[in-house]
Length: 441
Image (cartoon, rainbow, N blue to C red; front, side, top):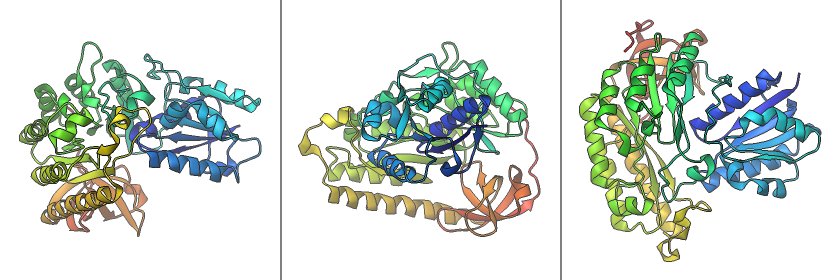
């Protein structure tokens, strides 16, 4: 039986794609192994969103060359493979397989070609591909990542995704509901719907509000999440569905990117500061106790001290629970690389702004979390924690709670009291065994 090792970089969509690849290969008789040294096929499923992500992969390829089996097939898949294509074959003689996100259906045949000494590449877009007939081999035994949409039509000036994943296309609603029913039957009670701008979902007849209602009605589904949405696509109908469907969790990851309308315009985000804040207000008015997290880019070309100050003030006004913060990384081929050189923000200025933003976000998060100590909430135990004899659990509003317990509790729901916080994560104690199953709807 041939063996395969898949190493995943980047976002949840890449995790889902790795599950698809493993499922496709498992159907062809491959067995997954836990280390590259033991594998006949090693695949790095990559991200291209920032230069750092690609640099990590290049370094990892260098490491792998030292201890792979002599006849092992080494491949690069995903967004970096799509972006660089044949350049990966030209710059690394050990790589024999380069496959973009729409090429996984042909993975077994491509591997066979590589075994015969050919250098295989598959980076054509397929705007009809949703891998409906491929059964994913899921890594997570608690929740399921379910793609509902692939590609993106927004084309923000800094973003490489439209060039690595193609135009936006949505799955049929019935197919998503079918897959949800399948994972619930396997014992998974939390589903995360995935898309580059997931709430712009539309299958030609049904929109994201319809999808939330249909998936939320699947018997046995207990939690429904989605990522990542776009502020422009939170229609009143979508927000109403979020508020009414019991399974939809009280958390939204709502990318802001900047709090300055001037910067947002150069980013081609298609909303202003005021429109973003209005979206936040509408969400919070409809969904009490909503947790809000976000993405923010520092140092986008042309960002002035005044623009950055507006970002800080927006962060304070919203009071995010947490944020993913990034220094601007120019990506080859994106419109942002064509902005005048004099608009480039110096590295030392970018570093200082990043540190100030980091301190601001963490301070807000710490203050919010300390005020919640003593509250009680429902958590789903996800896995063993990295440190100590603790379990890691997650609340509906996406707070991480570390709690005592054993492996038998993984995948179960409990009511806990939040007994302490580090400022970012909570500690908790069980106050009610096995939280009751709510009604679907």
